[in-house]
Image (cartoon, rainbow, N blue to C red; front, side, top):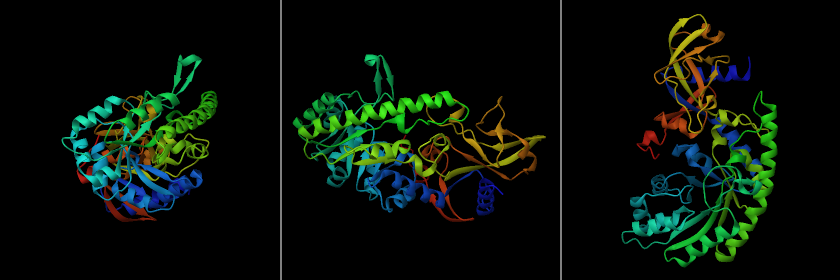
Length: 400
């Protein structure tokens, strides 16, 4: 019996009395993945990216482990909710235009002390001030550095289009703007190198592309390490009380942690290990989050149809954004239908061994987006469901 077949048997036994669709998290895999992130971080604390988890119980579980400290959130409303729920160190990873949220933040000493907001433009400071509605609390500010690799004099850009701040001088100039503006304090710098942390460098069947990605990432790491250190020096000259410098991502933890200028690492997807994180030479995780869809039809030889399953991930459209039929091994999509909104036909020899009511297990392409489809996660230990915990959606929150 292969390891995957053993896992399938465990998951089927654990959920035998539960109807699908349903979602699980294998706690042994989740904890092993957490241990691996800590090992790769080499002693630097890991700030958990909440968008990749989207479940308070699992955020609490991982933050109770040595090596993890703080949350990286994705909306201001989520940040405030987490802070009200007892999370004391929340870094909002993206700028916000939530005026009501800023009014709440600036009027509450506890929230203002717990939440740090992201800024890369003076216009965002003006928006916050206009939203204060009498709130006088000092807003903790993190400045975001653009990490993109620019070649040929800037004519070629590799990396996400995020912050407009690329050079040390640009980041330091904004730090001065913040320092001169009453009611704000620069406490952090963030630089997310998505073209390194979020792009697999070992794609099956594509050796030339994989080598090109590795060469690009090596060049990007060298360039960014030098520039990030210069940015930190420039900002500390303006804001000597700088508390943290955040960098990294699941795919680059050990590389980013090696930089002296970085004080903490961001990671989240590495806890669930969705299918997009299979193509890395730097680490191997264990799939921890899966969902099951029930077989509802057997249209013919080598074909079964499951209910639902059409849960594509965000990003550039492509087959890699679809969930992966994972267990039993050997199933694939019908190229004429793909993953359907209400039903999904699956092809392959294992289909002939599946009966109506059996479960097919899938891995989502991304991590936390799975939780937007399910109200609860069943936590599996061995071959038992030992707890049922709500996702953000299950607690009545769809923040984005």
